[in-house]
Length: 379
Ligand SMILES: *Cc1c(COP(=O)(O)O)cnc(C)c1O
Image (cartoon, rainbow, N blue to C red; front, top):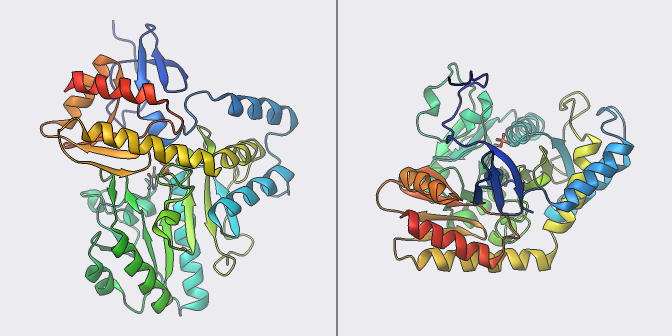
């Protein structure tokens, strides 16, 4: 008899049950091994069950789990400094999910608009962009079909076309306060914005006094070979959001801004677990590893190698930055992902033609080779 399922059915899951992970490997309840190119959805930058996170969790859980956001803690100060240094920004608000960090960014922009821009509140986002699954971040996202879900939808977002600067210019009016975008549109299928487009948007923001807000939830925390992808594009945003890889597997996110834009007053932003000691202890340690130039150089090296190997399959274009990569396939990418799973390789297909690769940032070259040969067999 089939076991009763108590979990809400919110996505299609393959019929395997994961019990354990180590580095780039996962095992299911039958003892079968998988090579993991999903890594918690670009979350486990240091792979599964990294020793450093285990150690910090043990040490910090003996000291203090949380003191409530109403009190100062040394661990939160230290984590905020680490994130501010790594992003070259000034102020940090810790939250628990990416959507919550983006929701905070949207609130911050509206507050800034109320204070400095005559009540401007509109935020320009991009078609196919993804910013989260709260009502407001769904409205900010440009995912096809989402505008019809769960009405009524929060207002205040205007969608422009990625890599089409004229549509951004056309979207600006006296109500506009900010532009919010991903530099590589992850959920859209790993679509990098062109450098020229990003430079033009950055210049427009400067000239018109708009806030430049970059959603680095997927591209940040070392994923593209620099701590934030903004660095690779040579831009200096006013607001950055981090999540996914920030805690190397622990649920934590951050809203980061410059001093000038940090305009919340007490009572306007918060959360019970905001800046909790356990998560902050992990963030300090993880960010110091993920922002190390030698570590980041190795991410780029591994990214280049994987991209070359994927390109070498002769199927189609491999695209992306660092270790956020995609391969365009002919035929059904979802079917390929399913076949790959049967061969022992975990892959994600963000759409019908695309396979996405978001492995551990410290994946071994031999593991990349193994993944590519498993993929070849699946194809
Ligand atoms: C995953 C993701 C989010 C949402 O993060 P959650 O932790 O799922 O709320 C937002 N923006 C981008 C670019 C993401 O990849």
